[in-house]
Length: 334
Image 1 (cartoon, one colour):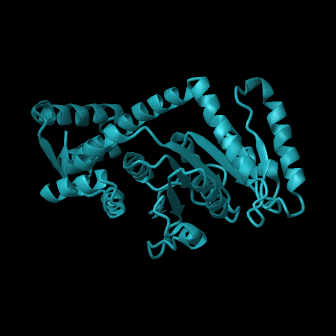
Image 2 (cartoon, helix red, strand yellow):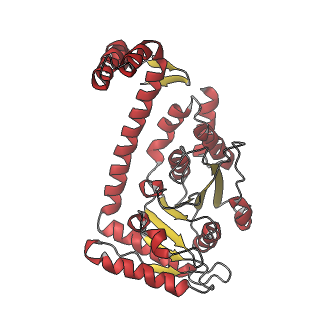
Image 3 (cartoon, helix red, strand yellow):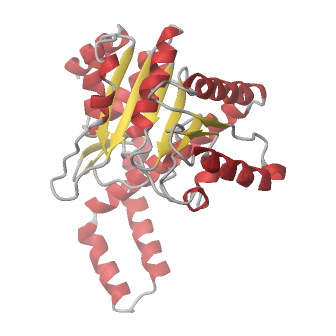
């Protein structure tokens, strides 16, 4: 704990190496994570979080690079979380987004962290939210989260970002097919990237048509901005659209509500995660109950009640005293 205290002290002093070390602890879910979060969580809530999502090859990394350049020209500091796919065969990730962001590699106002999904679905890594909190606590004014290339169901970014930008490109198939299954609902801003290619105007028109059909149900109509990272066309307009959405959230008090619900839901998810870890410690007792259900000697509801009753009785004293519970992954404080 003495080393962790020194690490947090360096973190608070603005040492980027300390931030990198804290992120490594969070990403690997080390036993000290709970203590680290206890120290840094009160410092969060200041950064504005932008999510950039879209299909593979849509140019998300290049857009992030261009947006970062504009923000740095305004004197803003930026933390970037780039999520890359993890190989199901080797368990590794290429982390190629850093290759496209070399312009900011030596800029002390920009911190880039690449993460592999490690098999997690939804477009983000399991610990992306914790990494964002670390960057927020460190003092970055903006945090940009680039998701892994997504299809139609990877929508986790909507639960993390204040503004979500959905990137579409010409030549990637039918735009309506791309946006019909959830993507339309999570977008606060649409970016039609690679607008120098044929078909960009058609995609923009299709998105506008879809928005027209939802006009009565939209409190905020997502702007549709055509961009090109080759010549920087439309990138300033994209940043202006993001800032416009930010002002809308502040004026409508929606930003505070979003973050309030986000904190509640995250706490409930962590409580469920903790409960699952406790259950894995009690398989010796639980397995006979599960086997009885499989043999149809007990119904699932009765089995679940018996497991819950056993766990509540066994851990009642520990939960009341705030002591630690041993799990296969280490000690969990409660």
